[in-house]
Image 1 (cartoon, rainbow, N blue to C red):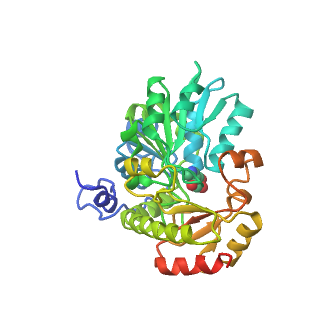
Image 2: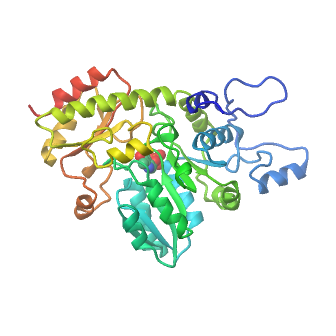
Image 3: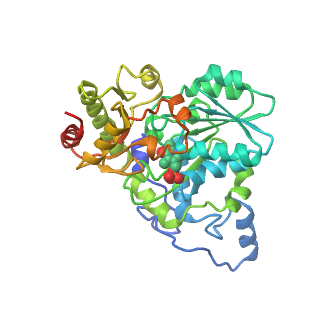
Length: 386
Ligand SMILES: *Cc1c(COP(=O)(O)O)cnc(C)c1O
């Protein structure tokens, strides 16, 4: 097997009889026409059949699914229109009312909102935990699924995936993890015991802030096959053009991740020395509680860091003073982006919940881009309080 960075470049391409296209062609079609009704019927019933209708299967989308599945070490993928599409498609096809879920306490705001919805509207109980010991204590006879994020949003906590998944495995749960912040280049959670890995490909996999998408990768092709009829009926399937743009992004993922990690380390170290900064959260800093775990679990510390300016006023003044970096949502693109989580990405949390996951009023999240790191620092430095 070639290295992961090589496999990123050599994305999957659909089979054609003669020469192979160098990169995946865009099949911008909602469906396909047949001469043989049996082939048509098989394609509607079988995830490995001929592509029939693009909500159920499309060669460009399939190329993305197969590419990410292979990078993650999984057997099959299902690409969606957004990361939330992937998360909700997985949760809605795996859970039934009356089930219990154990979810990591520190979660992406949208994932947290989905769990709250499942609890209030669909009778699915959710316990929020920090780490394997709490996960074990939370187990109930009706626990079905365990949910974690490799590197959490926004406080960049590193999850003890081996510990969490061992608890899940022993109890017969389905282990699901959001690997958006790490990407398969920094961590391959299936090797740690994950059954399903979800991504917002809007972030690093796409990498250029020009496309929305998500993907769920299944460690076992049988689980994918079992869920597939429902996954395609939910209707969150990826559009071929979005999949095509994402594949183009994946080809440079390894180069971009190397720069994101290197520059984030550089910026984190400078922020840590700045008198106006109360605390810097980045797994690459020895002061980070997940530093040792990150060294074992990750091959790099990612491109996102957060820091605390102590008050909402200082945080909001900072995001208004940045010039090279932009104030805006999302992360994982080539350009540096900053936001104030308490008022935007994590607005779904109450003040008490924000405190519980450590998102202070003065916390700023920065997604470090691939601009020259000296230029990024010059901008952040001029925006910090003197
Ligand atoms: C952005 C994000 C999502 C949601 O993805 P969308 O593509 O915006 O739907 C899920 N998980 C994490 C960790 C994210 O950063």
